Image (tube, protein in one colour):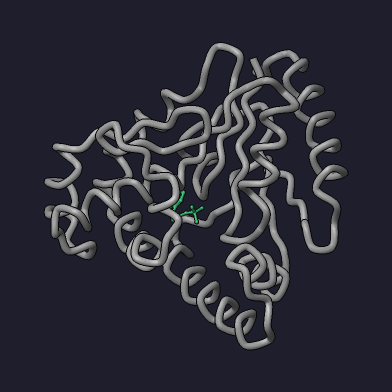
Length: 217
Ligand code: DC
């Protein structure tokens, strides 16, 4: 069994690296952010105020969130594209800040770990979701690099677009700050100007050597 926790801020390369690492290790990729995004969509569809934890929890009580083959399902409907859109992205920090919402989603996130293991990606994978992970990684990149990646993903990499993403990243970092605490024993990896394949190759070796070590006292 190999369990890897990958945490880090938006645009640090988590999703790309976690997905590639999971494929290389032959284990599922558990995208915990997708659960917060689906919960946010459920709240928005129910007309709940994202700032109101009781309203969000009430919306969640009647909702079923599943992840299957890299897609996110809300009550059986594939909402993978919709949860990456601007409406959800604007509201998700507020929804994910509610402790009761975090608790409500934890079991579903942990259920993604199979007997073979998993690569669990998020903000609190190493501290909360899988604190027993064999390998804990904290990804970083410069704010400019993170903004450039987001701009390229959105299809417009003009100077103005990158600046707008950089401002949005600073806003989200501030909102997510309380949850962005590196776990103890974490390995920090700066992805700025680094090739994804090289980073993944390093992490595969690290994960394999950590998983083979006898459990500590
Ligand atoms: O990684 P992402 O952009 O899809 O995350 C969406 C939001 O959910 C972001 O505001 C941070 C939050 N999040 C969190 O609080 N805890 C996690 N484990 C994963 C994401």
